[in-house]
Image 1 (cartoon, rainbow, N blue to C red):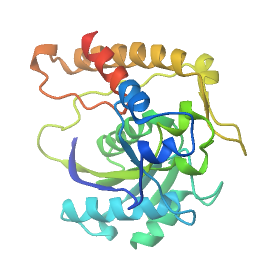
Image 2 (cartoon, rainbow, N blue to C red):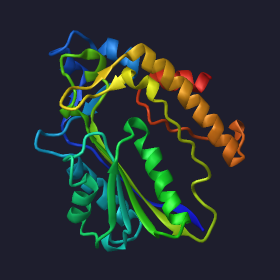
Image 3 (tube, helix red, strand yellow):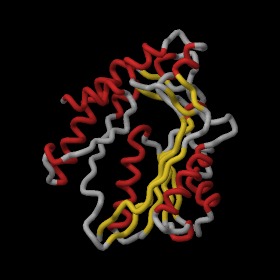
Image 4 (cartoon, rainbow, N blue to C red):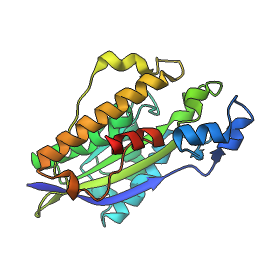
Length: 250
């Protein structure tokens, strides 16, 4: 039994926060942000908007793109570090908003790696025969946990959601291999304590991000039996242009 990516969807809030907007509230500049990150703008949700609201629009599009209805979804998985509540899960709230019919629904937190974890979990459920259609959503409202006086983090993060429907397939799998690892000893480099704002040690986070992504990419290729020369497109989870360039060079 194999799985396929049957539908995709995305959603971002309408409000755009540019580098020039940040110049007015931070000791920074468009040139400083652009040369160090490659970022020109980010989307910011209104204060009343929650992760499930962003996830709803992305999920609706993904389900329609897959040619399915919400009632066809067996499992709803939401990867988020900024959930609506401690409980009930954002996935349960999302399933209700979509009109799904009593699916298994749960959240998990894996920060930037959440979407990769999500599709791996979905792929495993399908290959075990426990589900036929799984909705996987990554949804964040990081603007709620950003310290807007901290230029090391305020320039990097924004709000948005992406969704895919992973479905049972009779053909070869779309998901050839995945590699997931963790190392809690680096948790102090990028973290958000309960009730506090996000904090990051940028230089060390950069080094570990490049090293970890390079290792994971090479292992994923090896597991899939694919050579580097066969790859036509690499889509990192990372928005920082310097990390992407360093990864490409390595």
